[in-house]
Image (cartoon, rainbow, N blue to C red):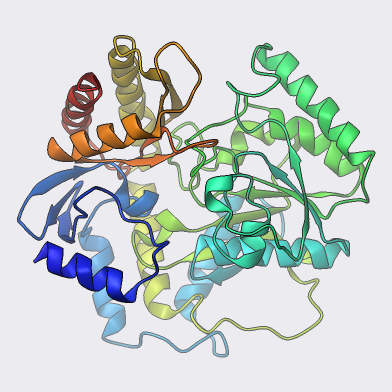
Length: 428
């Protein structure tokens, strides 16, 4: 049956639509931190639909809210007042840390970043964007145009002029050997030099922790230091929180808060986890930025009643059960356990991350050379052991990504770590 479905998939869907595993899975249902495939195999889910199932599969509070809303009305568009949308916007505006915030809902992180780029370029009257090397911000034409990761950039055509900045990957590149303070200083000097050679950009867009790039990050405070340079020139800061938001990093509710010395970003984008699988994205911005557009606009599917009901129930559950604190506690145990394992596996160059956002970089032993074949083999071995994880990375896809639902408990973290240990130790 799976082979039949795979054949039908290949017959009608694009060749570039990626599928994991030599024998792709059909996931039929889930509960808590586990999912089942069409053959009845049970897996511990450490990837959550690409960081999207943030709290748990089939969370009763969310499914109840969705079911009840579906029984009333599912959709009406933004042309009409929408109580769930207003209520969720109020909560997100308050949580964002952005003063006098306005919220616009979209259907995805790609669309959220696309909207942020529209706002920034319109507000600043500039089509120049600063982006980070190794970055990923979505699959739309404009988002691809600012993506600093060749594996996810299918065209060099773009409506934007993009300039790439150092700093997103702490342990690679020309400044890797420096101390954290010296690293930040070197990246700031590079930014200043770059700005001396171009017309004033509209904004810098940056993921506090790079998601598709393999969960890489700069030292805490880099974007605060960048902010001083940007603010002097009126350049906006867009924090792409599509993967880092909602407490996943444990230490902070938003990734930008690790760089918050000089205040919040001008624009914040979010998606993925807030809907726990429902299609929600959005943009938060200061009112004068959000309101700068001088033409009409609507969203047909952004902020629809059924997704907003899911988002409200999911956010309430996350806050009432302190899932950020759980991510800090359980994630801390998990990352230390994986580092202990990696110390005995020569192919593991680095275990990095924070909270329940952990990257394991695989290289050829004794080198910095990416080893995508071995990373793929570990992915397969983990699946054979009953664990689903992700992968990513910069110059090549050679990093494993571990990002379970934030309700993960200690026993499940230990179980997943043991499966990963066996998978890593299976490397020839």
